[in-house]
Image (cartoon, rainbow, N blue to C red):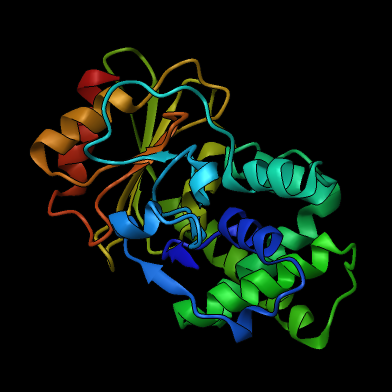
Length: 278
């Protein structure tokens, strides 16, 4: 199995659906920095999860992102876990529906499964090795897929870690700056090493507003609209790719990110591009 290194609930649930009862500790997982190798994507014997081949489920490729080099507009493709559930399970269990909705930014939906999101987030904060994150994440998703939502001592620890992290996010929000774009959107921007800051910025904003966050540790920049926005960031993505190849994001066009290795652009430069063209 090949998995993209930007692990999330969508990728881990997708892998859990594909593996079924197989223990992820007993298989080889290859981590791709961005896309899997062309020969891996073309081989149906190798499941490729969130690392290219969007929509190519017959080749065992499970993704819904576009990448630098993709041509033209793509039709809507649901999150990878939704694709996998439809094809492998014949139905979409409620917890998978929840993860699919969250992956598209619909954070307020399925509050009954909110604890899974908290536990997974705490796991990512506690487990620093990406390979171990992948395996722990798959194990959690296999458990939830089986209908077991009881808390182990380890999961209780992860829940507490996430609670403390959210306190830090509240402090980060005090650094956020705002301006108006040419199309009269509110643009919020901030440097923050915490991935939860973007979501916290979005929550009080209007549907068509936009957020730009740069992680000063990794130099990764993320630009996001709300999922309900009628606009798209694909034009911004195309423009940024001309300046710095490697920008990409989900086919929905509501969120894009800089190259996996980080961006050489300053936050203010990206903010000015978004201000002028959004």
